Image 1 (cartoon, protein in one colour):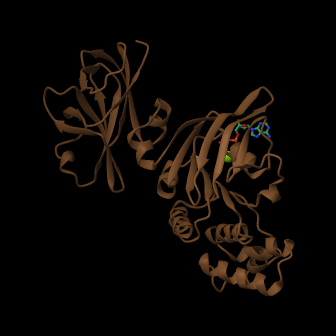
Image 2 (cartoon, helix red, strand yellow; image 1 turned 135 degrees about the horizontal axis):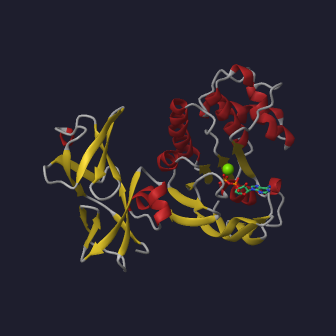
Image 3 (cartoon, rainbow, N blue to C red; image 1 turned 30 degrees about the horizontal axis):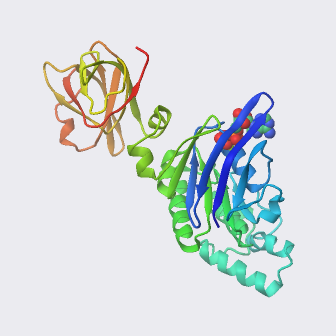
Length: 343
Ligand code: ADP
Ligand code: MG
């Protein structure tokens, strides 16, 4: 099942939540809608599901407009952050609920529930109540319940947001593996870039109701289309400078640019791993702090005549030798994105 979204717009009183958004999802793709909270991701998903009506634009499934179709008729499965399971029902009854409503015969229902329990890694737990499960197991039951009626489309709205970091990561890997097995076309909403990049075939970055960029994780990371995307994905330095020939000057720091923007003012967006520091008595910056962060070390420095800059290095990197607070350093920028700025 493919999805075609064309010019979707949705206003709430005096406010545009979704602003002329268009994109396609190919059959069997897992696509993430990534963006900050309040950006319109849930509204977009709810319009596609038929739970919310757009003011303008169309949603088509396999090329057929579904705008007039009720949510149930669209045959989409939906999983929310807090998709409360029925507490008085067992896990198996929860998973089989949609099939029972649809009038599927008991034997067939049971076979499908068994299949899903196995697929979800919930074998042997069918007789338990939701209260006897962990948070991660509960979200897998919610997912099994959504998949049971064989939806044409699976829509997930921050399904793992309320789960601990470690289990969340396991759920991610597991959802990716599940998707590779069942291949149901899926749209996954998240504000967590790592989650989007770990899971999705393609990522749509949404901000203030608009689609900022659509691309593979590598395209979004390596070629951000807008300053917003560059700043949103990854830990970045944002340095304002002035162009002199093909170098950006940021205080005493000089950054050569292959593609300088038009005009004198320039805004550089530099990822924390696209910088090298080494001790140099005539360098343009001085180290302020060295912060161990698990397997990485963050080094914060002050650029002379400008603001702070930081970089991250692997814990045992030789680049860290001799780097301590007070060390004067040279800086090499291995990769920078440059955007025009009113100087
Ligand atoms: P996201 O899921 O990206 O966090 P939402 O789609 O939930 O964003 O919301 C986008 C904006 O629309 C938010 O500012 C939110 O407050 C507003 N909004 C969402 N639903 C309604 C509603 N029913 N009435 C009024 N405003 C709403
Ligand atoms: Mg939301």
